[in-house]
Length: 211
Image (tube, rainbow, N blue to C red):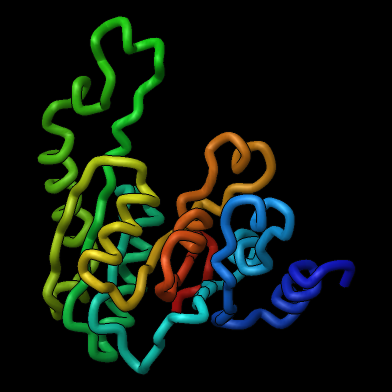
């Protein structure tokens, strides 16, 4: 192919694998801007789940502590189901994590609203209720210790901080697979997370096959 990502993706689209495992250098800043990331492009466009591993990642037969970032969409349920299946191999804990993005449009500053917490003061309590509702849709989660956590801040930074705080073994996250203008405008929490942490990340999309 004319590039490594195009060759890999062409192979994936013609061989329909169940999983891709790919290493990532975790570049950031100018180096990432100039060189890009093969792993991120594969994560963005692969037709199957992708497990990214950093050079310092440790992968065994089981992942004792799994973090599942949720946003209460259908994608969150996909990630929770995958985590529940992985937990059967010997996980001790599954952590449901929700990051409240506090930023609001600057136009609201004049109204004295500088954070989403000013607009919806009980958003953390509401998030905790939605976590319970999401977990109830995945019966397999009842077989493992379930821990729920809600923090406020930039989502990928809060997820990365929590991964470090509990020394998680795996992050399972579902991505919308944004491309083009949508990705440029909205960014990608998953891709930023790949650069921010040194732990394995399993990425899924809505159209991925089950694990």
